[in-house]
Length: 110
Length: 120
Image (cartoon, rainbow over all chains, first blue to last red):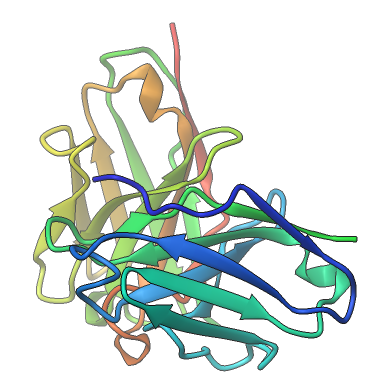
C-alpha cells in the first residue's frame, strides 16, 4: 500500500492562494471519487476539510476547495490566513485496501 | 456534542500486547463506521483499521493478523487489540468516526489520541 505523493512543503503570503497536489494511481485517486483532505495543527488531531473530492463538511470555510484530474487530486486554499498554517494530508480509497494517506504537506504562511 | 476519548496507550515491550479503547459519546458508534489511524513521532498519518456498522472489518497490511478491531455496542466503545507489537508500531493512535453523510471513506470526528511506545 504505497502512500499518495504530496509535496513536502508549500508556502504563501496572507491573502494569496495556494494549491497542494496529491498524486496517486489508477487504482486509487484515478478510480474513485473518495478523496479527502485533513488539516492538522501541531499536537492536535486531524480535522476533515474536504470529502469526496470537492465537498466541504459543515463549518469548514469556503476558502478551502478540492478537485481531481486523472490520478491527481488538489486542495486549494484561497485568501490565505495565518491560522491556515498546518500540515495537510490527502487520503483515498483504493482497489486493494480501505484507505491510504499521502505523506503530508507542511503549509507555511509567510 | 460528538466526542471520542482514547485510552490504553503506554510503554510495552516488543512482542507484547495492548488493548486500546475509544469511548464515544454524542452519537451511536454502531450506526457509523469507525477507524483507527496512527502517527509515528514526527511522521505522517497511517490508516490502521476500520469497522463498519454491519460489523465487517479491514486492516492495513502492516497490522493484518496482529491487530483486531471490535466494538461494544452497549458501552458505545471501540477497541483495538494489538498483539505481537513491534518497535515500528510506536505511534499516537487516533480513533475517528466515519459519518455516512460524508461518504464512505472520510472521518469527521477524531479523538485526541493515545501514545503507544514499543521498546525494551
